[in-house]
Length: 108
Image 1 (cartoon, rainbow, N blue to C red):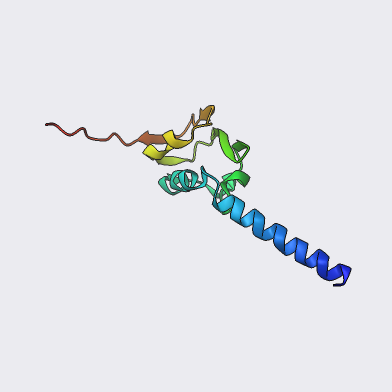
Image 2 (image 1 turned 120 degrees about the vertical axis):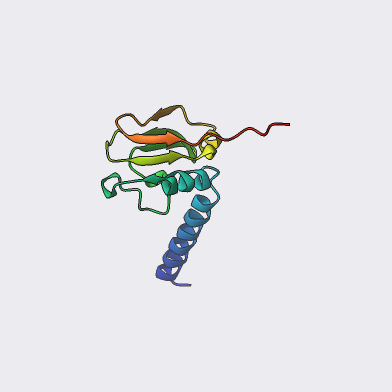
């Protein structure tokens, strides 16, 4: 095989591994739910399919560790799944209109 074919093959393999890695990251589904529940202005640049590339989001070892949204143009509600971000240490959403959906307890 020629060197250029090998380089091309390795590039495709690396791209495939990157795609699989981002899809299997444990925080991706929760971050997608967060994005869907909020009205995010385009200035925050949360358009990438990979939440680890979103602005104002920091990650370590494929886990979300920080979300800092201080834009006054974000509103919506926080999904209960946010609690599943087990490595989240900093969560700042001041100057926004973000609410929390309260679950109703069942009375027995």
